[in-house]
Amino acid sequence: MSKMAEGICTRAIHGDLTPDSATGSILTPIYQTTTYVQDAVGVHKGFTYSRGANPTVAALENVLGTLEDASTVCFSTGMAAITTLFLSLLKTGDHVIVSDVVYGGTVRLFHQVLEQLGIRASFVDTSQLDSVSQAIEPATRLIFLETPGNPTLKLTNIAEVCQLARPRRIRVAVDNTFLTPVLQTVFERGADISVLSTTKYIEGHNATVGGSLSTRDQDILERFRLVRKTMGCIQSPFESWLTLRGLKTLPMRLQCHSANALAVATWLENHPAVRSVLYPGLESFPQRVLAKLQHKNHGGMLAFELKAGAPAAIRLMNSVKLCSLAENLGAVETLITHPFSMSHADVPPAQRNRIGVTDGLVRLSVGLEDPADITADLEQALAASTRDK
Image (cartoon, rainbow, N blue to C red; front, side):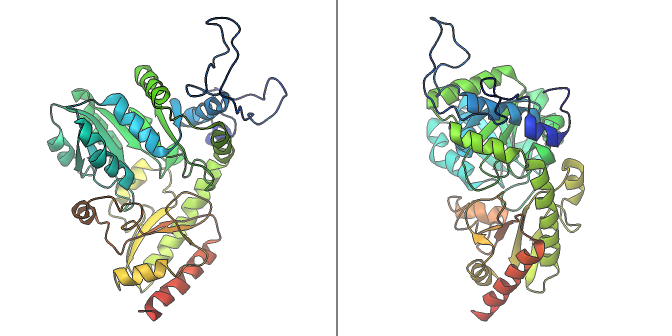
């Protein structure tokens, strides 16, 4: 990272990039090419074939790396990044501890793919350090944390888990998609690997899919690059370029997302139809002390349930007009999701119930619209959810 670019906003805009040497273009060009002509056998300019590396992808990795203060590798999707993580560090017979509140695609990956390769996972309440300690086996090689967890926002104390894992030579990876390195610095808390779905806040405009893995361990980094090259899951040049553009406004967007989410969460908490609201910025949040310790701000994600139960919650989600019923998060538009049938549909029912993903849980990714307009839409949808019963 450049010593002249210490501020988070400056790093998000510039990274360590310079204007294009050929034209002076302030934006990194889209190198839409598979092939690079070499000067001689074994003599090239750092790129040989775009399945292995591409200049536009490398530029995105540069900027993300300056935000993470680590080296970064980018992938075609967030799940491609997570799959590469597990295939890079685990083998048949190995065991991994995974946060019980975790994205449904991660659960599906283990139950339907990795278990068939002899890689076992224990889904554990990682918010309880004793539970993590009790789950460690001689074959445990990795602890995979998602904090805040999707969709209930449950938090894990990253530093405590890392202190537990380090003397046992167990690596710790943190899925930091909800907060990004702007709001939660996982390496400062001892993590070995940061995982991001760049589809979400990093790009932020519902325009791309992508993922990233960051680490300060050069051996792990080279392993990620090898597995990515072998599986062919590198990010595309155009989507990398779009993500670079989105990154420039990431810190400012997250500031607005956080303010808007707090306003909407506070409004929901005071609404007579709402049973409970989960948002780390609320004083009522069960892990408020940890949230203040671990987060610089609390992002745009919240969840809530209605007093009238699941049927009313579903009617509400079917009645929104400004908010969009969609299976994504982290964009400038406000997105409302039904985790039970959408993002966590592949999670076994018993596991869903255990972690609080009920059929009436509503996940809200609060966008950058005026908060009054978001709450007005929720108000009319709440009225419709009662009227249509």
